[in-house]
Length: 156
Image (cartoon, rainbow, N blue to C red; front, side, top):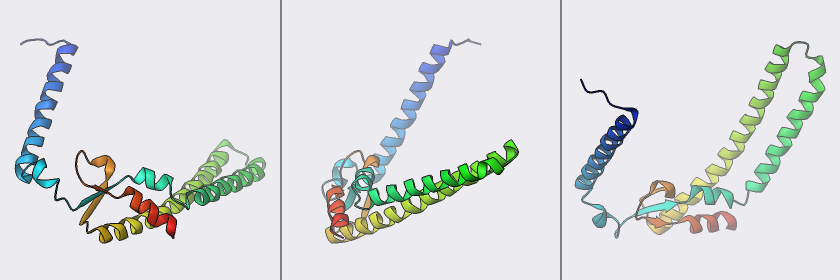
């Protein structure tokens, strides 16, 4: 049996991966009728969620609330740390503190995301879009509604 070097194995692996990806793309194109036929009359919207979240009018307030939670947890930790006698107690209390911060961050993020999703839905309905996907997932086509969503959020 032939013994392959690591470099040869990598090259063969890359070739196999490229063939697989090519066949998946070809299958997708044959099933959808091609990219050209879908893009011009598309009712698909795209939105840059990262940009929307960064320009969300409530983002600064959420960051301040999270910062206040972190400061409160740190203060609480400093007050209770001398009373904790073992490393395990300290580690457990630290983990509980981190969980409080993570829960608060999740709660604030969910609140912002809920508002963004509602603005996306309203914008999509107003523009007659049947579906909206993340801009990062789109290679070609779609109607970019990012600025419309930001405008809707800042008017509220």
